[in-house]
Length: 405
Image (spheres, rainbow, N blue to C red):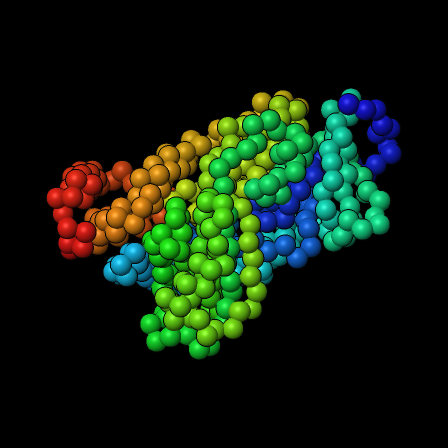
C-alpha cells in the first residue's frame, strides 16, 4: 500500500469498471442511493450475445418496449439429425435486445440517474493506507501516448468482463471455465422461407458446437447467428458458416461480428475483503447450458450496488460478501441444475438427439419456460416433476426411441 494526500485526487464513493449490463446497473443503483459514482467503460465494445431477456427482467429493471428489437413467441430446437421441436411461449413473450444499442442505453440511464460516465481503459488499482484505492486508467479509447488518469474510490466494482483485469489484480481464485462465443449480426434480407422473426432457433449439433449449441435469434430486421465452445482449435467461424447454411441465412449480408469468452460458473469469491467487488461476467454469472447472462448480470449488478452502498454506510467489509450470498441463495440451484444438464446432455450427438426428443414433452416444455420466465426452479407442480423424472430415466436407458412423441 502507498500513502497519498487525500486531496490529491478526485474522490468517489465507488468507481465501476465496465459499463455492460452489470456495471451500468450497479452504477445506477449506487447513484439512486445518493452515492458519488464513476462509471468507467471502454469505447465501442460489444459483447457477442443472442440478446434474449425474459419478462422478469423487463419488469424488474423497467425496460421500455422501444429497447426491444423483437418479441419472441416460439422457440425451436433442432437435433443433430435435423429433427425439430417447436415450443410455444404461452401467455407472453421473450424480448430481444441488440447489445450494440442496449448497453449504451443502460449506461446513459445510469448517467441520467446521477452517475458520472467516462470513457477509458482500466490500468491498475493502487490500495491506500487510509482504506481507499487509487484507480488508474487511460482516458479515451486508446493506450497510445496517454498518461494515466487517477481517481480515488472508497470502493471499486469490477464489471469488466470474463477476463476481468480488476479480478486478476484484486480477487484470488478468479479463474472460471469459459465457453468462447462468436456470432455474426446479419441483415434478414434474403433469408430463406423457413426463417421466422418471432422464433428463436437453437441447434444442438456437434458439428456446430461439440459442447454447447448454435443459435439463430431474431433482432428485427437483423439476426444474431452464433455458437460457442470450450474446445480450443474448434473453428467458430466455420461453424457459424455451417449454421447460416442450415438456417437459410447464407446469402444475408453480415453487418458486424464479435467474439469473446463467456464464463459458465460463478466464482467462489466476488470480493477482496477490503473494498473491491466483482459483478457480471467478472463474477462468472452466466447460466450453464443456456449461456444466458443479461438477467443474471443485471441482477448481480444491482446486488453489487446495494452491497457497496451498505459498505460505504458502515465501513464493514462483510457487507461486500452479501452480493454473492444473496445471488446464490436465489439462483444457485438453477445454476447447479443447468450445469448438470450441460455436462450430461451436451456430451455427444446421441445424447443431444435424446435431449431434443425429451423436449417434445408438454410437461418439460411448460416447466422449462416457467422456470426461464420466472428465473427460479418451479416447485408448484410436483406431479409434473415426477412424470419428467421417469421420462428422463426412460430416455437415458433407451426405453424410448429418440424421436418418440
